[in-house]
Image (cartoon, rainbow, N blue to C red; front, side, top):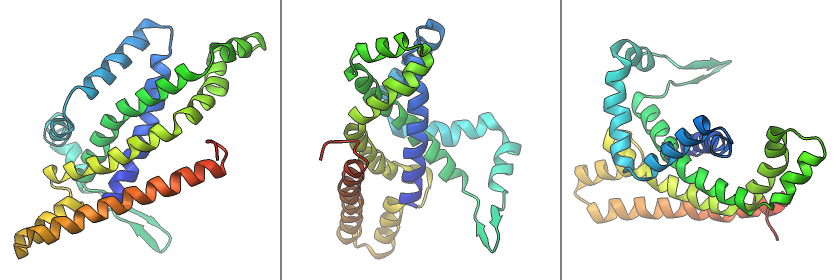
Length: 221
C-alpha cells in the first residue's frame, strides 16, 4: 500500500506542480498570484493537518451521497482481471500528499526555469514561437533536466511523508508496523523492520532513477 500511495502521490504531485509552475510563470496577475499564494500556503502548513482536512473536512463538504458513491464503487473489470476500488482513506491520502508535494515540486521546477538562460526564450520568440510554445517546448524541457535530481530528492521525501497516512486509517507500512506492535508488543522489532523497508525503497529509488536519467541523457554521466 505504501508503494501504491507513493506512486499516486508522486504522479499527481508532479502533474499539479507542472500546472502551478506554468501559472506562476504567467504574466497575468490573476493567474500568477493565486498559484503563488497556494504554494506558500501548502509549504507553510503541516501535512498532517492537511490530511485531516481532506479526510474529515472534505467528507463533510462532499456530503454522504458523494462519499457513499466513492466507497460503494466495486472497481473496474479488465478482462479476467478486476481492479478493486480505492478506499476513501487511500484517495484522501494520495490527493492530500500529492497536493502538499506539488508545492515543493513546483519550487524545484521554478528554480530550474530560473537556471535556463533568458536568451533561450528570446531566441525561441525570435524564431516565431508564441510565448506559450516557447515556454512549453524550449524553456520547460531544459528546466526539467536541471531540476531532475532535486525533484528526485522531493520524491524521496514524499515516500517518507506517506507514513502520516496512518493517521487517517490507511493501512500502509507504518500502520501495519503499529498493528504488529499492538498485537505482539514487539515495538523495537516491528518499527525496525518498517524503518529498514522505508530505507530500502528510497535507496532503490535513488539508485535506479539517476541511472535511468543518465541513460536518457537527462543528466551528465
